[in-house]
Length: 379
Image (cartoon, rainbow, N blue to C red; front, top):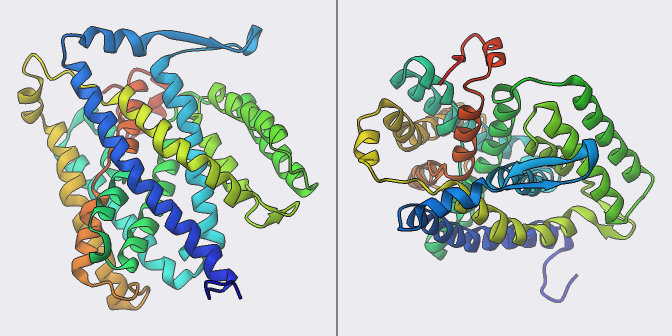
């Protein structure tokens, strides 16, 4: 038994969760600062420099493997793949060691997350009409960094069970959002490139089975998987999630690979990548009466009501059904008021919501989007 009196199992589960929550809380503060800085920059006397800077193109690679993107898309397509890789690591850890391992304990937050996805989407579709309905995925997602950051400000007033409920709910929410991005917000698909990405993932599995512990081979193959995914038409961030889920959760070569990667990458994700994403995407120019026009647009109200009303209604209703039917149970010390508060925080949909909004607008002019009968061809 360790000197602190805790069993190795408790230390293996609780310590990573505590570190994750602390990093998310601090990262949420940095995220807010970056978002505010972007808005100030885009509405200052230097507003044009904001557009010019993020539109500047950068080429990486050589020959036919050279990739050219503007800086905003390098952040959205490349750096955010690392963010989603960390999300994949957290999902894997929860599935193997955390709350999602116990089916009964995981049933309630999982079903609550589904309710918190369906109701906002239905509200969005009910309020909007025509091409604008293509953005139905925008009010679905929860921003973990913001939600956990605000919850952390309340300190010990919030029971640990409520924090765990919100974290698990947000993780399942991320799984659904990732699936939605992969299936519904993907433009033309190149199956040859997609096969290349799948082959790269197989190589990763084989290397892990052979006991390869050096990081550099995985970085090389992972980069190839990212490039193939990018060229396939499926959004490149999906490669990050897939690689995260394939990371071994146990000890490989006397080292816990998953915990090591999460410990090393999460600070970079929380304090650099996500704030950079906010800085690159949150710079909305409010001049010219944009705000007043937005308030008169049904699209604005669809997103707002979906996130604010839809999340609370969907999550609370799903939790009530789970408890009444005995399908799931609330964590110890969690009351209905804690559920209501957690569902309200789940309505903060900044990072992934902006991400889906960008994807929805980027495919609006593509004829291939017509393959989904219920998605308008133009937004």
